[in-house]
Amino acid sequence: MTDFPAGVRSLLPALPELPRTVAQLLLDEPHACAEYSLGEVAERANTSEATVARTARLLGYHGYRQLRMALVAYAAKAGEPEGERLFGPVSAEDELPTVIAKLTRDGQDSLGDTAYALDVDALRRAVELVGAARRVDIYGLMTSGLVAQDLAHKLLRIGIAAQAHTEMHVSITSALQLRGGDVAIGISHSGNTAEVIEPLQRAAEAGADTIAITGNAQSAITAVAGEVLFAAEGRGTELPPVSLSSRFSQLLVVDCLFIGMAKARKGSIEALQSSLDALAPKHHRGAKHQG
Image 1 (cartoon, rainbow, N blue to C red):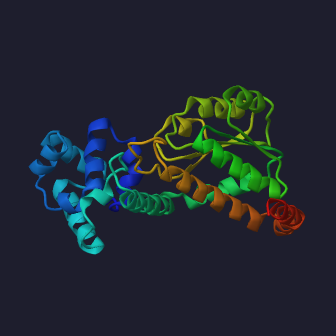
Image 2: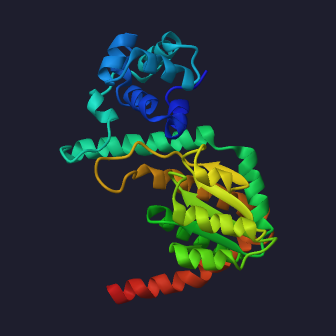
Image 3: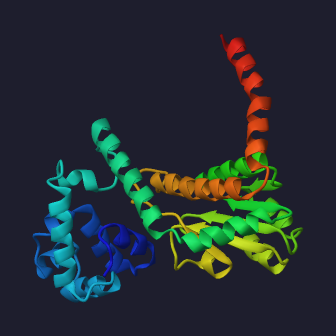
């Protein structure tokens, strides 16, 4: 049986369009749906009863009755919400207090979902691969590119030659230079970003080990990655960027990878301290100049 809501959210990106609409309704309005019959959920989701029943099975339940029992249990445990509006995506009409509440809830949910679904064995293998790497390439676009830069910076601080690439042509050029003993990491919350998948594929063809950090376990990037680390996709908003909380879950995975590296790699703690010692005076001088 799938855990609600964490298990449902982890499966959401891989669902077909209509079942995904139903599942999103369950996540957005859990208290209300706990009171709905099969037909009422179908009507609320603008779909058929057969689709709702199919969604329940795709989510790991025997049928809608078992799914509804999970909803009732969750609603009882969670208590009464401050209105179902706090479960939906951020919209242009939301007042700032509502925006704060929604983003906070979504961030908490994404971090919890990531912890629930992250494969610890895959994380250990990723730590071993990166720790033994001669060179590490990290590919990402837009907000995932910022996460790629964050990981590259962290790895450099413990003595690992790492570079983040956020432009496709440079990414591919760099990937072609990799070989056995190197590692390439692709970060894409959708898992279908061509600008990330292609260089990761090129790196694999060159003989490098490959790792994907994604929110969709059934996406294209998983086919070219030797190891897959799940970072919850997040609910998303009606405003750009598409998913603000995806960055939080990606950073959680990056931090887990980094801490694993720092613990396992000899001399990492000393390297971190040396970095802090070298940079601290510069920060202090900068503060004095600003003052």
